[in-house]
Image (tube, rainbow, N blue to C red; front, side, top):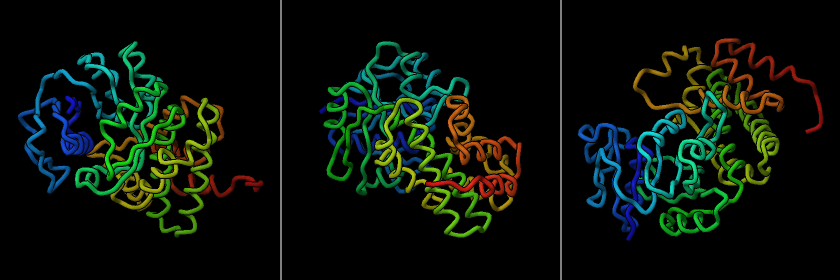
Length: 313
């Protein structure tokens, strides 16, 4: 039995807390406002926190800390709370201001603290319900990867290690942007052929991006890239796909992002990827960034993609 601290009581943090408690660990679930967190999270209807999970507003001693907050809040939280090592970052995206990936943010905000990242095709409500899934623990420290896999892995939650942290993080980040594009194509009524083509070319961009920034293309072909992309583009259960769907149907971005609503990571990630890789050929990601920023409308964004020069795949 280990002591697990989970920072962040949203849907994903709650799901991971339920899973860790199911593995026999003592779990402290940290929340900014613990009094507002009941035994049942409104974002995970039907899931009740087991007795092994204690909701708290304090940073408890732990054998491992799962950091489950949006990437845009990661730096502030690490600097303020100084959680116990090692860290498992359970967030996807890039920091908008700097273009840094989560592990790079942690290296600055918590220097010298061992850290890895958890990424892959996982919907929170399915993990909490104990349905079969797989994910990736990525990072440069083989011993840390192995210890986290042993602590959180289970027959219904199969964990794979990967030393390509750059490729794994970029796959988890960029797939959200591609999912917005896929949703927009669907919302605009352009058909399944168009959506399949868009997703496939988006995957090519993800691989190109990973290689350009020091990752491996084969990582993007795995759970943290292709696997996550398939899940996120599967339908409106995905927040990123649902936002794109609304844009494709002509709804305003502000109406799709109500104050206090769930974070849609792909919105910030689209422009952050262009900050990080301004010279990489990323037509789908660039079109989404321009659409979200209001620089182009949907017809122009789609027209721009369709008018690209013919070439070998």
